Length: 80
Image (tube, rainbow, N blue to C red; front, side, top):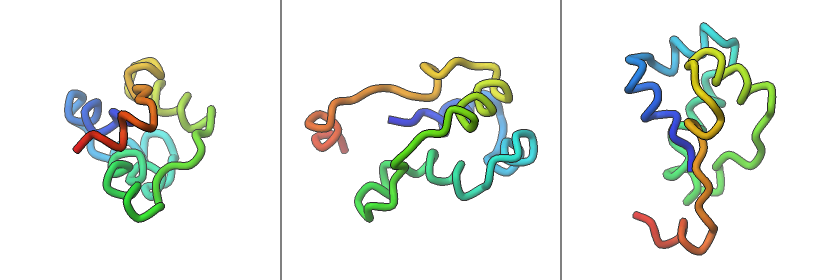
C-alpha cells in the first residue's frame, strides 16, 4: 500500500509541487496516490524504481517505510 497521499497532506504539498521538486512525472505520482482505485482497472503501480523512491524520500524528508506498507495480497483484497 502506498502512503504518498498521507505524506503529501502532512507536508502540505501537492503532487504538482512534488513533481516540480523531483522531476518525477505527474502521471507516476498520480498512480502512487490513486493506486487503490487504479487496481480495479489493472492500471496500478506494477514496478517501483529505486531512483523514484529515492527522489521522493529526499524531497519529503522521509524513509521508504513512510511511503510504503506491505499488505499481503489476500488481506489487500479484503480492504475497502
